[in-house]
Image (cartoon, rainbow, N blue to C red; front, side, top):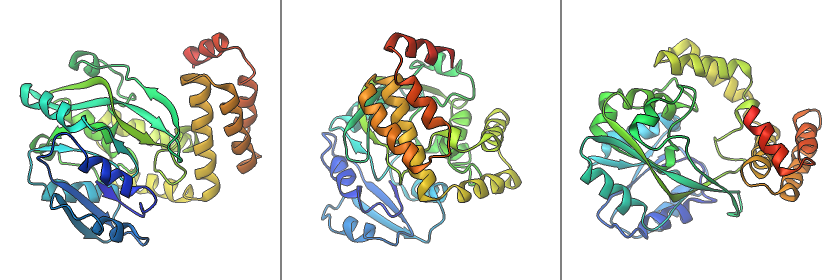
Length: 305
């Protein structure tokens, strides 16, 4: 579990891991230079399975690689400091990996929640079996990072997380890992994933066309060089503002309530917040217009997009 200024949610995240029905694990938390109460909250848990590593702020890829290099187990379960594990998550994924030795990774479906913990929608993947995952276009991310369990040595043999693949280090890793063995997604929700303005998850349309071009080139090539990585880092730094984070957050919620869990009243509530935080952005007005369409028309629009 990498953690950076995660004080608001990390207590609930840690508790959900400690309450697993599978108990033979270590919870390795890499505190990536947090300046809030993150470390204090971690240390408030008196459980010998927790191992805390502090490092200066270096970013999520460095924190993940630090975890990989210090983990004692061969099976690594990834998890974020603002998400929630359901009680049987580790047991079910551990059972799958021990009974399928030819597999290097297994993910799961996820239930997405908003910043206050309210349900938004349940996410189902476009592919579950190894064969169908291998057939996906490279632009489609086949796993939710916070839901996966993988074999440590397989990931190390891929070079671990690329320090230049800012915000898509997991997606780039999957492109390498699916060549090392079989992969699978369990068709079951075992993790609650949180959308929040503080999360690194962002509506990619807000990242801009240059970001998407560099990202998809890297995914097709299977690597990204430092020059392009530095450019992506500069793009992300420019977007690290409260206005953009809030806008992206409300944009995501608006679209999920329109296209994934049809609820036009909740969609319009979030569209209102999107327009209020970013009144000059046309997307909000377009989403409002879509919210007036019948559900069957919206599904047609979604399929066309």
